[in-house]
Image (cartoon, rainbow, N blue to C red; front, side, top):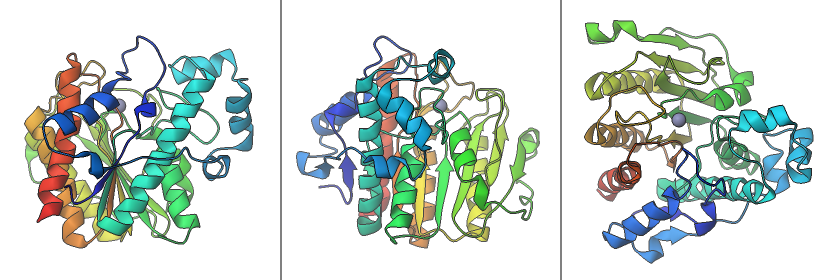
Length: 328
Ligand SMILES: [Zn+2]
């Protein structure tokens, strides 16, 4: 039995037809975790969909009404980059419910993973980049509203910047200290910008600079990585950003957005991490959180490897890395 719960439902499937987003990955991950004995059925918990009240903790009433009535404009549908349908709205509500459930379990068990979610490109008033509803922000706002946490940190390791997260939590930002100098000269090409808040939500995003989104609203810490960066440099930057963030901010919940798309075989990414390097990345996040006693909630976010089995392996490895760290 795992030392934490996995929030999952077959209905995480996104009904978007043939698409670069592998909507079937959630079930493949679930099935592989069971088939390989990494997880057993009792490790899984089934989420309920988020309520409208939950969604309104982050999104505007006007946007929610457009989703419910199916009245997104042609431009809004285009920005979403996935075909709109009422069934798709339901799937995103369920993903948000899964993130709420994973956050709740994280606060009880030290860790909680949703085999879904991580829709970090959703803004309060619109969706974009395959993301309709910001499940992670909703989970954070729910935990705050229920009085379970005051301060949360997002650590976004998807290859694309967490623009929705940055926009949603921008209100809690104040100027702060610069990042300390980095250990290796090869890293000097990466540009780090930093804006911090001392209450509320602190957002960290490590991403490829030359990639979507073109406009990157400021996170608390943005690490704009150069193209083709490999395992060692990436991990050094992550280590640096985590240390810096945790020197300035003391979160009661860490939300790790474990995108599989920094992988070198990714179709929508331009970094060069290996499958092993991505597991080391996960391991670092989990070890740092555990050492400081910070509960970790995990969502999967992107992953567009040429071979979908690689994406499944990377996401399964996140569960394995968490098991190795949290079992001890
Ligand atoms: Zn991505």
